[in-house]
Image 1: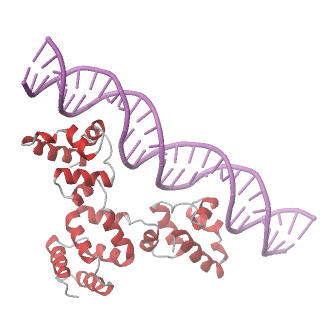
Image 2: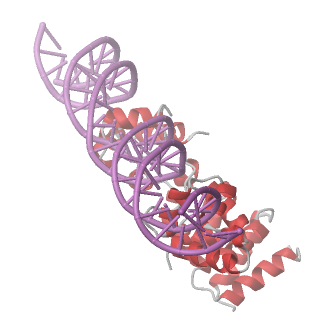
Image 3: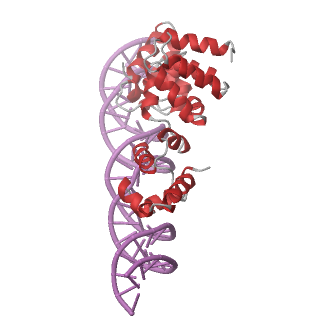
Length: 116
Length: 116
DNA sequence: AGTATCGTGTACTATGTAGTACACACTACT
DNA sequence: AGTAGTGTGTACTACATAGTACACGATACT
């Protein structure tokens, strides 16, 4: 699904039991012109900037990384992690490309439990 | 070090024993205006596009991911790997942020040897 | 001495990014 | 019946990106 229609779906679900989730009110809280958010939600315009997507994700209670991904973007902090040790992380990510989710998850858990 | 000065250093090292590595000739092979490459190498201008950096890396025999990193960029294929499973890879990368190189390398090797 | 090559200064441009501003028509409330 | 709020169409803008084009003075070759 496209970024905009996904945002619209989420917002309208919120709107069902909270009328403060009208397009105008969300636009107001997030700091955008209603007309602009309208175009975004209909995918008439490209997704907004990373910062704006972040504020949108927070207001809608959605996962920031997921929303960014739907916009074809990668969070700036993740980019920095890779860039700091580029050839190393490049190799790792290409290895992990085909690995199943549970394997990636297991690795993340192992690392978190600090076994190096 | 900045992207441009690094490129210049590499190119001039090549130039020492191969006079086909003049700024003009590299620019010619890579498909850029000499004046533009000159500005890039002196960091007068921002680093060029990912595609151009790729061609530059190839001509200079440098690691593409490293050169991209020095330009503050992440290779498009890596971005796609992350985006396809964003929350998952986001978590993994943030866990790996502080991990020492050898730990990351060990994981990459384990995954390559396919033990999932 | 002449010319070929070198790196660089200056001016310009096309496309994309990330929006703002305002008017309009429709619906919902009271 | 009036007005408050809703979503949207159209027009515009400031800034960044990713370069091209051409002229110039210095150096190197022969």
